[in-house]
Image (tube, rainbow, N blue to C red; front, top):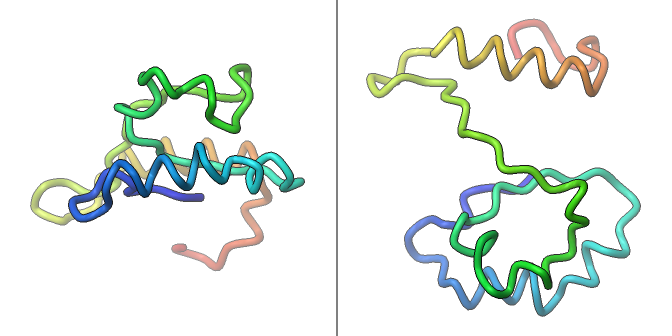
Length: 97
């Protein structure tokens, strides 16, 4: 899983280098990957060069797991847990993880 590529201090050139210039790295991996790509890259003219198949690429809304006051957002956490449990065994995690 990779995210926060659109944070301040990470230039668009670096992001393009990772996902466009060195795309072969991701193409050659035999694993499932989850990336939170900057939306500006996903909808840019360079998007067709991304190393991910269109049928495996989805735009998902950000699911909040904390509120602005830093308290847990139980509804968002429950939604995320449902998605994760559909993809992996819940017993892989310790209780309350």
